[in-house]
Length: 88
Ligand code: HEC
Image 1: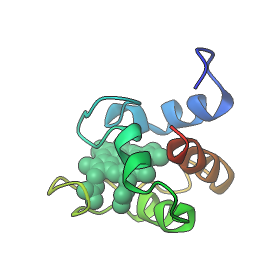
Image 2: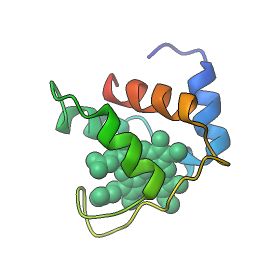
Image 3: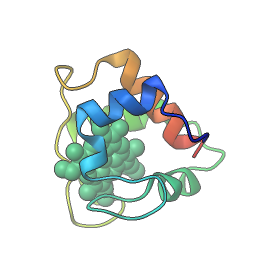
Image 4: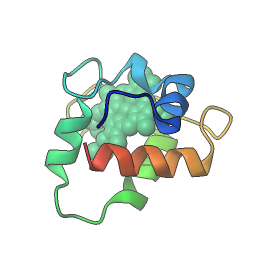
């Protein structure tokens, strides 16, 4: 990722993702690098979009991710966010 804030970064910041996530260190949730490493080479964008929407736990540990409804992040931004995370 470049140093400049992209529209996707802005959408994720607005949606509150960055309160629990960071690019390369664990906060409350896993770092996006860890997520990308876990799913490297797998076609999981749709699955992860649903997980972020609904929230849930058990993949990286017992701490649950809260649901992220469309009022927080719309489908287009969520898709862009997941694609960005998987490339990080
Ligand atoms: C309240 C804190 C919190 C917020 C807000 C949050 N997350 Fe998470 N996220 C987590 C936790 C905790 C996990 C680990 C869940 C697990 O272990 O199953 C996680 C996991 C994930 C995963 C991996 C899911 C999996 O099943 O492998 C992705 C992708 C993700 N978050 C993206 C996002 C995005 C995008 C947003 C903003 C729209 C967001 N998160 C907002 C806490 C949060």
